Length: 193
Image (cartoon, rainbow, N blue to C red; front, top):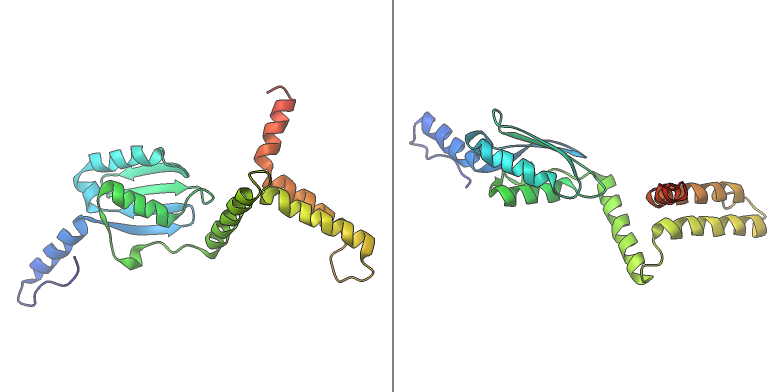
């Protein structure tokens, strides 16, 4: 519902109309990547709605922590940027609570790094699919840097490409960073854990 109160209506009627409109709306009070604060008068009027939403959100992938405050009608969601984003959370919360998102300006702006991360994740999924699950970017990127290191060592007579030792260092570094979970699991297994 948008629009102002009729011109002939008393000033109090406009405030009542605005209050009625915002009573069923979900407003983004604050957003910082990884942290989303939402407000709705519905959470103030019905604390059980906020509590049920918190319980549901705690089970959602990527959600690290959720808190609600019935006195202010606020819900604070801390989330993992690598697993979800503010837009997806906002849509899910609006759908679950049956509240409309307050205007297009209320939708959180995704930072450019999230766009790059989402594109890299999509590419990683495609590489896994194309290779039949054998390779992902966590393997291909370090191998490509390692091949570049060997090529630089053997064939480079000029400083057009980075030195072989620099490429070798970065290939090992990226392999370790991109495969941290696998390496930790392998280390725990080797230690008998």
